[in-house]
Amino acid sequence: MDSSAEKADVPDESWTNDQIKSYLDANNIAYKTTDTKAQLLAYLQ
Image 1 (spheres, rainbow, N blue to C red):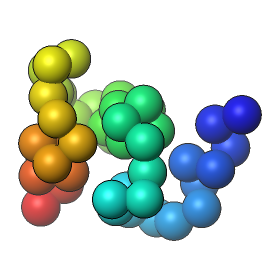
Image 2: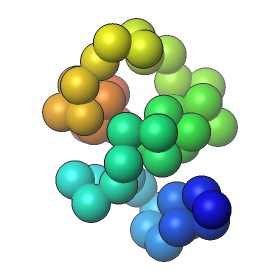
Image 3: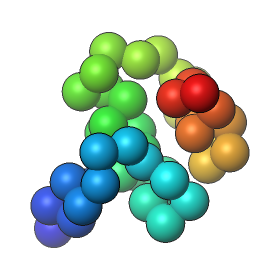
Image 4: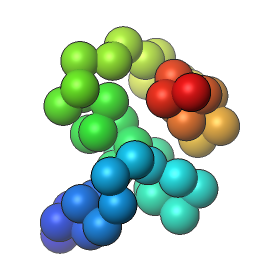
């Protein structure tokens, strides 16, 4: 079901929060479970 997380190299607004969190986990990037999508994406900047 989450195979769509591989549709692009880097998450963007079209990804769900869960997909972004999975990407962050895979890349050992820390985040808070309460972060918004914008905050999650900011970790990638």
